[in-house]
Image 1 (tube, rainbow, N blue to C red):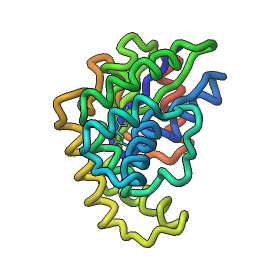
Image 2: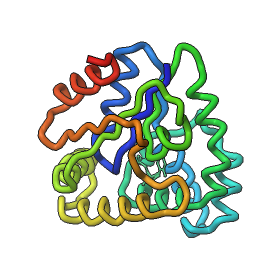
Image 3: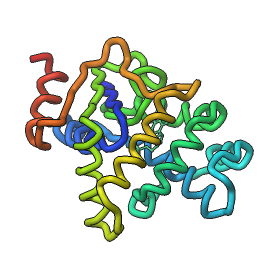
Length: 205
Ligand code: DC
């Protein structure tokens, strides 16, 4: 069983995907974290996020099993990840890892931008999770402030919109729903209601 969960930044797809995996006893992979790790290594080593050679080298040699989540959850790393992720060779370098993960027993939930379209086009279930930009900015702003970042919802909104625009308009694997994806708008749903809606979709009810 493979479940693809895609959507724009801070749409709630990560929380949903993780809960679905727990609920169904499946493995879980946050593919955004891989791009974030690439962005982090680029910045840490003094490279521009758009430096193709450096990004491909990092993507090809990164230990994808040893990603420390906490330091990667900043707005700056999200931006660097989005820039690096627009490169076709960076994406190619981590594609097989994602596909192999998806095929592990007993099955997996993967979340990202291109899971239903490119990584797992034959996934058993595909969800495309959205929420209005304002709702997403409010949710992500709260998270960032809780983890100690001094940032306003307006600044978060500007970051999200810029990142979504880049992710949506890039030439390779752009953010878009697969033709056979179920759309789930969580703007007016709390986590519990969104989870119930996702379970209903994957159980076909
Ligand atoms: O899901 P996230 O916000 O952690 O992802 C960070 C960036 O990584 C996102 O702006 C675009 C990129 N990304 C991608 O291009 N493809 C994916 N499958 C996942 C993330």
